[in-house]
Length: 61
Image 1 (cartoon, rainbow, N blue to C red):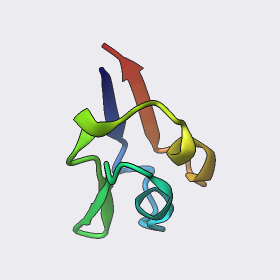
Image 2: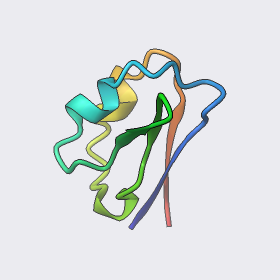
Image 3: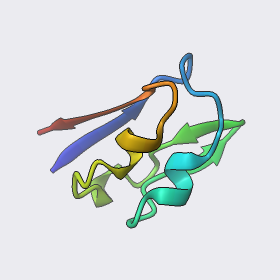
Image 4: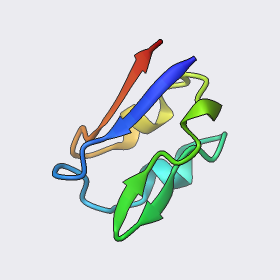
């Protein structure tokens, strides 16, 4: 299981993580990425590769 978090101070709202995630972990909330379905993360690292501001962190629990 993985803990997905987004630093809203770094997030630019580009939606790249929303578009690339195969498991629909992210949604946009108030113009920022929200990992509302973090439990669906399989650590494919797609979101990490596309985030231009390095706002996303994934930690193994």
